[in-house]
Amino acid sequence: MLKIIRNRIEQGCKTSSYPKEPINLYRRYRGLPKINSDCDPSIISLCEAICPQDAILGAERKIDLGKCTFCGRCENVSEGAFVTFSQDFGMGTATREALVSDGSLPALAAHAKKHFRKLFGRSLQLRQVSAGGCNACEADTNVLATPFFDLGRFGIDFVASPRHADGIHVTGPISKNMRSALISTFEAVPSPKVVIASGSCAISGGPFFGSPEIVGDLNSLIPVDLYIPGCPPHPLTTLHALLQFFK
Image 1 (spheres, rainbow, N blue to C red):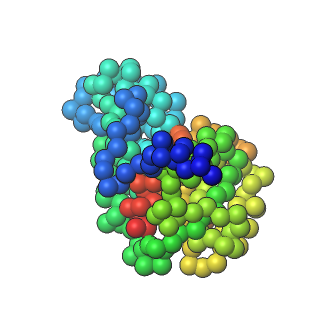
Image 2 (tube, helix red, strand yellow):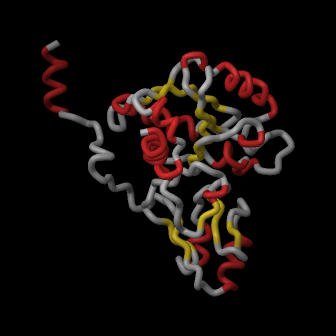
């Protein structure tokens, strides 16, 4: 016991002070892209052609964050003339349409459903569903339970059973083999309930878009209330979205 107490004193508090204080991420982190709408059309066309996800809409000069995997090829090929990735990790949206961005996103708090805040503002229990993902989104979601992020201090937890949950947090491209299991999990959650699509795979199919073996867009199966883009979404992107939407 004395060793434990001494160790605790030596290490101090490891929990981040976010959101009370801003947090700086590593310089190589790619967050919300900034777009130069005055860029040379030939450079925009080059970026559009090189994008492996068809996420760049050249004619509209926008990027579909629901498809984007944040690989950075567009920034590299244009040398930042058209796209630069910022350190802004707040990318959650309440609608799929809002993810088609010109470099800005609507304030998530303004679009949160008020009854969700009233119901789940003090306590939110989520059931995680990996619908055929590569485990990257799941791993970065698990990080939220570590002492540094300590998701539980906000009254948000992941639970083992959908019957104990207020909603589901879905990752992965929703393979055909997971389709019925996902729907059954959704139906097992008591109403009222929320649905969160996390990662480009759940939002649009991600790198697996167009494959006959996946469903892809989660919203085509069940209504989605909150979208969290990324491949995978950074833990802070998920945390920011949950706090802004529910708290």
